[in-house]
Every structure is written in C-alpha cells, then in structure tokens.
Length: 428
Image (cartoon, rainbow, N blue to C red; front, side, top):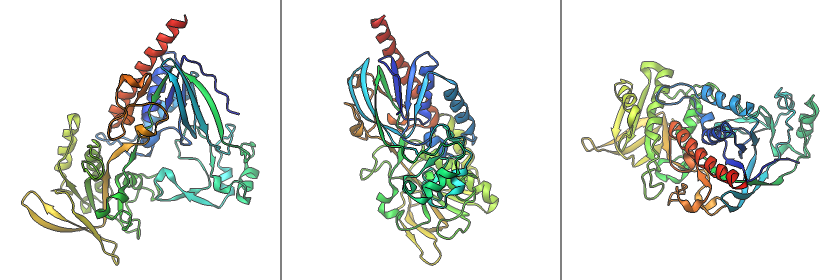
C-alpha cells in the first residue's frame, strides 16, 4: 500500500508539469510539506515533449533537468505518479482529498536497466510522441523521465509477455499483482496545475486532420522535429516517409472561433514561427515554409524573433483564414484554398505537409474538477475568493507560454503558503 503522511499543513499540488513542479518546489523550499500528484508515469508535462523553446531556440532539457534534480533532492516533496484526484472536500486550511493511484506494475526498486523491454515483443502506441510511433509494452516514458522507473502496459499483464518481463528483471521490480489504490490525504491548500491539452483537430472538418495523414498538429510536428522523436528528427511525411520540404502552417486552427475555442491561445503564432526554423535547419535554402495567419501576435520580447523570421527568404506569410484543405490520394500532397486578404485574390497552394497550430484548452476543465471551483466559459480556473484555498496555476488558469506559466505557479505557491502559515499560527 502507498503510505503518505499529510496534515492540514501540507500543500497538495495536482499536476507535475512545469507549473506543478515549480509550485511544489517554491513551497517546499520555503519549508512547507508538499504532495505532488501527476496522472502520467513521469513528471515534466508538455514541456518535456518540446524540441526547443522560443525565442532562444534552446532545448528544454536544461530547465527540466534542474527542476527534476531539485525535486529529487527535496525531502519535503512526496511524488505520486499515475495518480489522479477523485475528490476534494472541506474548506481552506482543512481539506480531505481522495487520490486514485493506478498500477504501474513496476516497483520503485527499478534500476531502469531496460531488461524488461528487451524481453517483450508487444508494442503499444507511444503517448510521449502523440501516437506517431510505437513503444515496447514495457517502457521508460522518455529518456529524461523522472522517476526513472519503467512501466508495464496493462495489455500484457496476465499474458506470457508480462511473465517474460517479470522473469527478465534481476531486481524483482516487476509486480504483476499491483492493483489500483484509493488513498486519502489531508491538505491545508491545493494548487491545481493540470496544464493544457491541444484542441482536437479532428473537429475542424475543413482541414481534414482525420482524413489526410499529412495534416498534423503543431505538437505532433514538434515531436517529428526532435532527434529523439519517432523519425529521429527527420521531417518526414506520415503517409509515405517523403521529406517535407514545403510546409504550410495554419494559424488559429480552432482558436478565435465561435464554433471551437473562442479565446486566443497566445503561444500558437510563436510556435509556428519557431517551427519554420526546424524546416530551414533541415533543408537549408531548399526549405519552404508558408504561414497562413489572421494576424501575428508576438508581444514583448518576441517581436525581434518575429522580425527575424519575416526576413527569412524561405518563409512566406499569407494573411488569410484558410477555407479548406484538399488532399491528393495519389501524391499525398495537400492543396490549401482560400482568399489572401492582402490583395484579395483567391489561391490554391499545394504543400507537402500541413501543420495545424491548434489552440490550448485546459486538460481538466473547471466543471470536471472534483471540487466547487469557479471557472470561466472556457473552463480555465478563475481567481475567485469562492475557490477557498484551491488555487489555479499555470495553464489551468490561462493559455500561457512556459515563462508565464512558471510565474503563475510561483504566485499560486505563495498564496498557498499564506494559508498554511495562517493554519500554523492558529494551531500554534
């Protein structure tokens, strides 16, 4: 059984992405006890799935590695992975929280030697790469995963494959008898940092995401660009493995649209500008990137980066809301139809690959949070006193880039610390 010691002076952080890790670290390094709950097998969230940050184009590895080391070394933080909060009751300073922990089928004694993966042949869709590839049914979530503990997919439990994985482990770390657990915690304050998810591109019917394999989302393109991704960093079309040298980026795919997401997701323009660099790096002067946009929103320090991309001879900007995407079954190419509003002429432009800059929505919308939470019409947590000591952080509160998500998480940690200090003061 999982044992967690928590009192009303403990801060519960829900979500182990960059926002949740930041909130947990800030609180713990101020001397507070923290329980950090993450539904996935490893911490890091969507930042761990990025190839590079904008605007410096540096790799996320360094920032994540530092935070992971801080988490590992801080004895005030207790991490629960593959865990989800199923209920929150009580009031600020005195919450009771129910947490459901799914079986990993691998114990903490795992050394990440990989023998279990070598022993099995079954493969499952790889969630880290957004299903663009497969992974062994005994797997490490990714190279930088924390904790460095393998996972067995439930599909091989009770099969000969599962027994092979168990027999291959020299450290007796594979436990096929693990069961789902329900544990109860006390907490004085809760920080809800469950992050964001990409909008379902299949809902945008005119763009053909569910019909044309060479229409991908911006988060999928990020994994295709990464040397640790499913194609080894080569920009290859999903349909035939052809090099994608002529790439179209469609902005506001599902955002700023009354039929989909009404809000601007803020990061999409910068993400596409960044990704044009991936195309140029791969193919040099042969590269061709076309950005179809309503308007480019690159604020503050991002303006210089935008101007740099503007001056790139391999990048074109077409001011237009793309009307539809048509695929050629024989070639796999895609033709975009619409009207360029600068000159008002119709176009039918053909590309190797289409990347949809999909919008951000909260991974867990306000109505789905197991507590009485005030949220806005898009499901983001509102900063309302009625929420008591349940504080939103990062992209659970707004569409934010990494820097602003960290700032938001730090602010939430400070609010939670104030609650705990008041509890300690009353009890003292």
